[in-house]
Image (cartoon, rainbow, N blue to C red; front, side):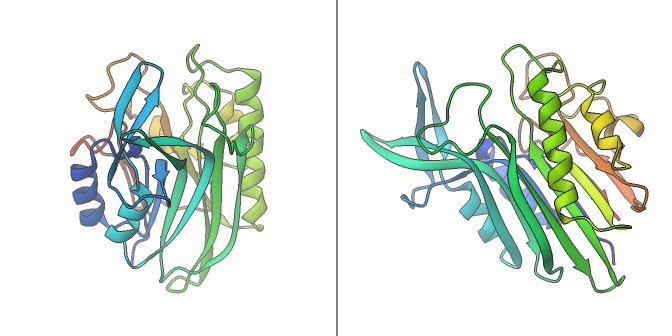
Amino acid sequence: MKVRVMCLNGWGGTLYEPLEAYVAEVAPDVLCLQEVVHTPASSKDILTYRDGSHVLPQRANLFRDISRILPDHVAVFAPAAQGVLWDGDQQIPSQWGLATFVHKSFPIIAQHQGFVHKTFSPNGYGDHPRSRSAHAVRLYDFERDWPICIAHMHGLRDMAGKIDTPEREAQSRRFARICQAVMEDGDRLVACGDFNVEPSSSTFVELGKLGLVDLVTSRGFTDTRTSHYKKTGRYADYLLVNQFVQPISFDVIGLPEVSDHRPLLLEL
């Protein structure tokens, strides 16, 4: 049996209907999902996000919704911040972060949750670059009788672009430490996410110290964004593996479009 790992920035559920259908169809064993909204104070599907003149509908309970699509998965939410969504004129506290969904046939035997930039922001989403979280799990594959570690992060967004900065260099070191927090010698390691960096970033030098190699660039993929992303610079998402991982297949999924990011799909 193959282990299927999907990594995706879900764009906050902006394209929820195709996202729902695609996740249900693929049903990955492990789903690493960034840009996840969790609003325990409301059961509504849609609330409103307001940031000055920037007003848009927001999928308010994406964590709940994906959990329902994958009922046989253990779901973990790693919030980066709590801010406010609006239900008419009423403020509703809402959390934003990333989530990991692991099929119950793969027990989580270790995990570590932390921050790659700043720390938890409890009183608003904060100024850019905003707080960013990461989550790592160590699973056990009974069929093959071995553990596997999977980690993902959502890299900080800098208004100046995706160039390397001291904050991004610190981010890569913090992500590496989160990976190491669950790893043991000889473990298979998958590290992925929306890194928000270019392929030339020193991020990959730092992660290379763990033996990690990126499959997106090394296998010739040149675009991890969809037609919904109108800017230049088509790289954002990466999936790296160490020398103990033997990929059966890897793809950057162009269609269907379920976000402004493309899903990364690894089978091992």
